[in-house]
Image 1 (cartoon, helix red, strand yellow):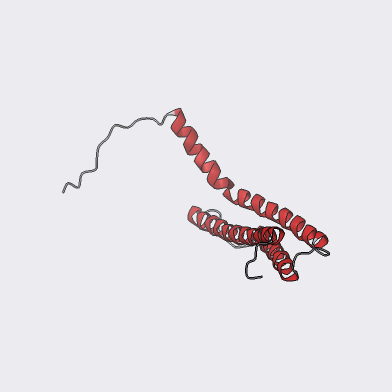
Image 2 (cartoon, rainbow, N blue to C red):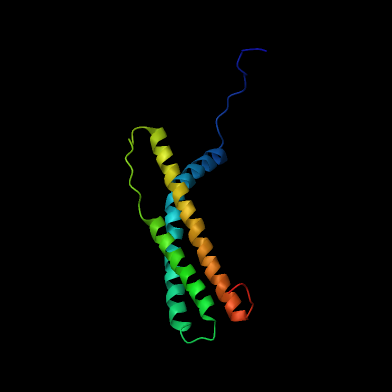
Length: 140
């Protein structure tokens, strides 16, 4: 095998290539902000669902067990979203790019976990309400 490096024709990147490369960098930088925005939306949605559920289901014909399940689901989703949007402090040296990257990756992974959990509990509450309204019976 040859130890000689491969030789190729060097060329300047096209405008499209430069555009998409820059767009990729901007997207990576915006991921944490986007995750925070979605967590804030989950907070808003779950506050509305929890308040509406508590107000409108109080005198409804829906079984008490179902009401409890869906209200608890919305409350858990709200709590998870609140915890997820809360900033996490950590000490890093901003002059070391690998430390910054590692920190930002960890923050994004944490926020994604809270997004998945919060969304899951919101969906569970919505499914419970659909089952309750339509009269479908599932282990409640």
